[in-house]
Image (cartoon, rainbow, N blue to C red; front, top):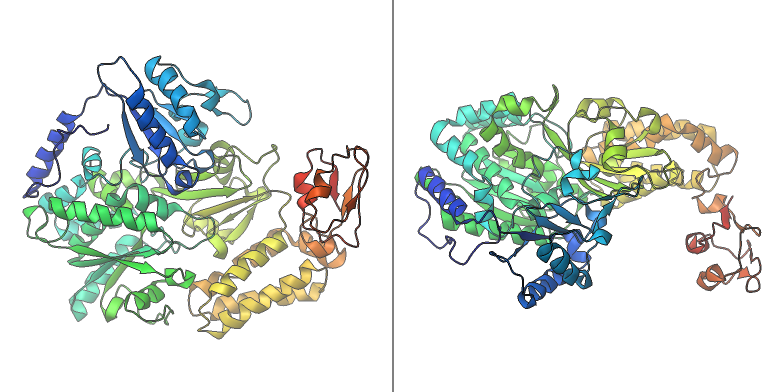
Amino acid sequence: MAWASTAPTLDRQGLQSPEDLQTYREELLADQDPNQPVVIVCHGTGCLANGSPRVTEALKKALGASKIKARVMPGIKTTGCHGFCSRGPLVIVRPLGLFYQRVKPDDVEEIVKTTLVEGKPVERLLYLDPRTREPIPLETDIPFYKNQQRIVLRNIGKVDPTDLRDTIVRGGYQALAKALTTMTPEEVVRAVEQSGLRGRGGAGFPTGRKWRSALAAVKKRGGPVYVICNGDEGDPGAFMDRTIMEGDPHAVIEGMILGAFALGAHQGFIYVRAEYPIAIKHLTIAMDQARALGLLGGNILGTGFSFDIQINRGAGAFVCGESTALFASIEGKAGEPRPKYVRSAEEGLWGKPTVLNNVESWANVPLIIEQGAEWYAGIGVPHSTGTKVFSLVGKVNNIGLVEVPMGIALNKIVEEIGGGVPGGQPFKAVQTGGPSGGCIPYSLKDIPVDFDSLIQAGSMMGSGGMIVMDRKDCVVDVSRYFLKFLEEESCGKCLPCRLGITRLREMLDLFSRGEGSEKDLEDLHGLAQAIQDGSLCALGGSAPNPVLTTLRYFQDEYLAHIQEKRCPAGVCKALITYAIDEKKCTGCRVCARGCPQKCISGEKKKPHRIDTEQCIRCGVCLESCKFEAVNVF
């Protein structure tokens, strides 16, 4: 709902007990009007970039100017990212559940008149099924949402992340109250262990075991112990953690407080990359509101337990997502990893026991405490419990953020939730685990998406990036792209990573030009293994994964580059030629006008030709032709 002016405010003396929290929640629930329609506008980063603030302003003006004859005026609420990023700006009308996509300010008056006054949907703004082209009015019926299991993302798109009252109404901090009043720290640790939660940042290390190691280190060496949230999300195409921090910051904060209670910590840090200004803003607001209400800081809920959090901004170095490099950055040093002779849980920040989990891991903890370890362990598969949030991007109809139970088949994510590849062709491969992950071919489309199955296939879960590729994507070029990224992001501290990744990339450059030999493929594989074995941290250790998986599943494509001097996908510039099909060309001259080399000639309304000697293979003609007259050989 949109809160009335008479709603309880946050400037009270603060909650002095868990009972106060329950009373406050009941007051807020009583203040709600269940009959009030609410227009929800997505203000996630993607929708903001597409103009959702202008949509919100237009709604405010339209509602102010309209003469709606209703007992209760509709309210307006702005929320975090709903996940369906390729369809933004998104507008949801509750309680009807109508889902409007790609809404512009000019659409607002029609929404007010047709939906809010007449109670009917605006047909042209509804989502169309990519296969049947039938409109789907309700959000819950859209396959993108219908086939997900949203528990970590349960509040995002429903709460205003800058208003703690919304979170409390939705059950926020109930798990904290439960732990502080009915559980011991040991019972909290045991619950996380029994839940089977594994770190969502990439390595998949059992969270409860990490916490147990930190407790053992404190007992052996003394404290203090620190808890840290890793929000330094750097994988290309990944935005899972950003969305959680922006859309439900209190879930992260509550999870960290629960972890601190279990571990006896009194200071925490959230390390967020500076490129996430909205996440930093919402986390700051959330922490200020939590402190004001007695949920963070000294004497939380009057229980005598104190814990506070500080935000540290990262400068965008990919390597600082690695634990020891992140610690060094917080300490004010260069973000470089160190040898892991001692685990970070035993000797981390400032040499003290430290528990580092990523954003999604912390957001899972309140669910485990509130619903119980057995409930959580019942989701997913035995060795990969719970759900996982993925950013689904690339050659797929429904681009966005999805949450699914562990163990779901890869094809279900791509086809049922993602809507398949545009054009209806099967996908060629799916890159999982970010730049350090591997490419899973279509032949493994039914592989369960869990930690162990992906590793067996040569890839990894990573933090949750998932890039779909089709037949027009070249695996040699894709591998080059990721190696170039990692080459630039390597801190250069160890030789295998500093020199090895560069040499791998240089060898792929040769293949992309049709040079090299089959012997080079053997050398490529051997060098990749050496980098894996000798690198200091996970950046170098996992960097060869794209190369090794594409060699494993797409060796024929490598051989085509070397033996046939041909790029089957038509991507590698040195191995392709552009030509115009005279039978299809209408002579519209669109390609000629766009060509930067001016190498396309021909009279208007007559077939054109490309001067292959002058052509730089930029692809402008291919992208601009509406008649599919441009071919790549």
